Image (cartoon, rainbow, N blue to C red; front, top):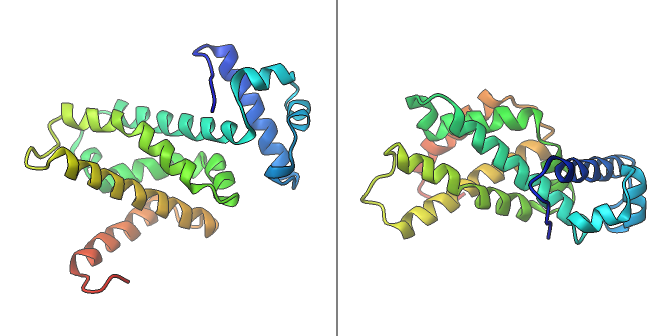
Length: 196
């Protein structure tokens, strides 16, 4: 678990620890074998700084993933209102434009088989978009809260699965190509008679 105070100094320390961990992983260290001492030496911070903000190494990646989702979704909400923004594929385009230049934490999490952290981060941050959509009147009142929960879970899963495939494939497609692929899949899904 992470416990970072809402002040610039604490966030800067957390970012320094994340950057240190990222450098160690790029140097070829295995996540399971990195010690707190190695990390704090690499990040040039004291051990107490680590323990003030995090309990375990994986908490650094959880924090960075949570922070990334919070950032991208706040940016999405702050965009001027327009119809394309409110469509699912418009949302996907915006998200992938952000991820195109900000995917390092996700690349790390996918490389260590912790896609579950990405999914949970998106799930934790998604209420801000749900609230925004409700304020703008984009939720159909005929859809129950239970159905909405399933729909949200499915859409998050689609995005995380797409992110994982994109990163695993070397990030060769640009955001517009990702949107085209997802658009085609959505159309094929409606006509589908077998699961795969």
